[in-house]
Structure formats: structure tokens, C-alpha cells
Image (tube, rainbow, N blue to C red):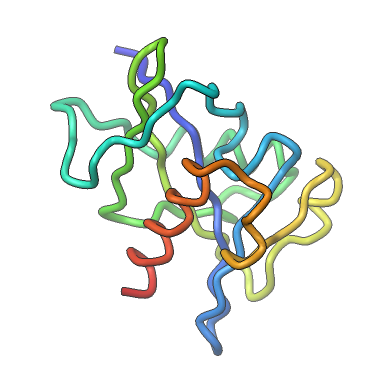
Length: 138
């Protein structure tokens, strides 16, 4: 079964705990925008089949021009989005570098944003960021 997935990629500053999310022209649900008719599933909703994060995270490293291992999966984060084409899994990845890879983001027309800077994004993406924030920082 081939599950449709999106990635939410963040960087957590080791000393301050500051979270910044990679935001590209398509938004923070990478690398294909979520459809307008999408709806975030409840936090406790989960299908029987869960996607493995390995391949999508490696694809993200390649697209960003980063070395293998530059992004690692954030364990136990599960979000699902209901779309007209079916359910989409949203996986969470964290950059392993001391600082966010700003140059990689800029090459793709993106930047790193905080949750406070997410106002221009759609409601689903803001909710995904909030869920990730709560998951990572508690």
C-alpha cells in the first residue's frame, strides 16, 4: 500500500528550545500543498497502516541538498489529514544540525518560521504546527 505523506520539518535549538519550521512556497506541509478541501483528523484517529518515515525523510534531504542523516524522525508523532483523494499522513522530522539549514531553505525559496509567524498559512498547517509544538515541547 502506498500512503500519501507530507512532512513537517522543524529545528529545535538545543540551548533555548526555540522551534522553527521549514516553510517553502508550498507551505509547511512539504513538499506538495494540501488541498483546500482537506480537514485535520482528530488527534486520537489512526488507521491500521502507518507509514515509515525513512524514505520520505531521505527524499527531503535530497531535495534540500543535505547529507544523509541531516533530518531524523521525531518519534510518536502521528497526524492525519482527510482529503477528497483519501487520507494523508503527516510525518514530523527534525534537523540534526546545531543551526537550521538556512541556505538549503533559501535555495528552494523558503525560510524558517516560528509558530508566531504562521498567520499567513492555512488553518490546517497552523494546527499541524501547534500539534508538533506540543509534541516536541510538551
